[in-house]
Image (cartoon, rainbow, N blue to C red; front, side, top):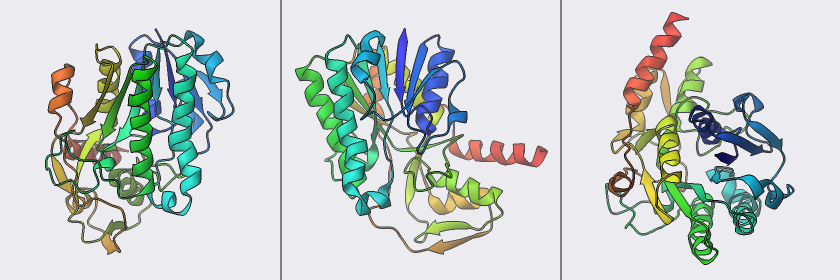
Length: 302
């Protein structure tokens, strides 16, 4: 089994690479290192440095079984300022991946989607039946790329599955190269503040709630979906429980203050995972409060 991970030097992509290698897959990583870091790439992976616009993907895909498309510019605020640049990274590059897969025997594409496509959903917990209502260009681009994948995947007979991540967290989530990364969940940002002896900055009053899902749980589900019989579909993935940002902050530090709210952010995210549960034998294992507690315990022992 040969797998290819786009964005494999980033947060989600590097964990996918690790898990795939642990499961016996040969892995090829493509990354520009513009926001990802080479130290994140598993030493047993074959690494190709470059952009999806420039690399000959058709040639590389000739021997690839599965593609895990995690490469993106996941930055909400900059996507308002430079929507064209973000559209290339988030939409056009997905089309390039699809086009290259069309002329090869790729078994399946697993796409890193986003629950931000729902905006402020009226349905809580949110199922896949909820209407898409993106609140920012990044969310719109993730939705557009996903819909291209589902539409063209059927047309070109390329199995395409999207996992709509709720709020990923875990090791490597904060990136100094890309601090505005949407995958740098508030947990990663707060951890960085704490390590630098800085007060935690809470947007708004901290009452906004998030469904935090550990990146290792996402990785497990992604691989199980790749090996499943599903061909053209999309799934929510969260833990199924929401915590306020203020509660998370208090768990990490007592030194925090409040800053202005940011436009384009949802009030609450909470996943209904029923569709995913019906498809694969998977449940989230890592609880966010236990993760934070264990992280602080390890720091105290150093």
